[in-house]
Amino acid sequence: MTYKKSILDPQGEAITNAIHGMGFQDVNEVRMGKYFEISVDESSNTLKEDIEKICDNLLANPNMETYRYEFVDSEAVQ
Amino acid sequence: MTYKKSILDPQGEAITNAIHGMGFQDVNEVRMGKYFEISVDESSNTLKEDIEKICDNLLANPNMETYRYEFVDSEAVQ
Image (tube, each protein chain N blue to C red):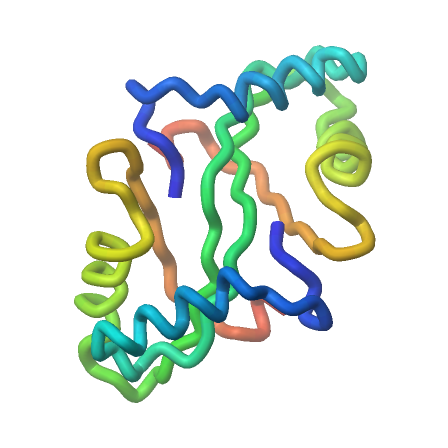
């Protein structure tokens, strides 16, 4: 979940400056966002709709943020 | 970038409770973390080491957090 491109990201800018200050010039830009690992009950047949409702109504600010989600096997994020 | 499993995640717990309060019972647990999109200069041949140094020395708290990273094409995160 990140800010829309049109939205200023002061934290991302501060991090980019810090990285350049550390001497890493191969980094162009950093955008910071929120990351959620949501463990779900696989047997539910409304998962996709539920995750989107949760993102739209709770986790994301629709005016400022966009989000992506993917379903992965729990071992993949140990 | 998320808290290590052994670390309490009060924000994640609060979100889990809110989600259950919304009536979504197919969500078991939520863990919240930080997400960074770092645009880099592909021609650099020290990218992997640089990203790991940046994570280890700036973005992550090694005592409390773990991180994963992947290189993706910039179009993939529009």
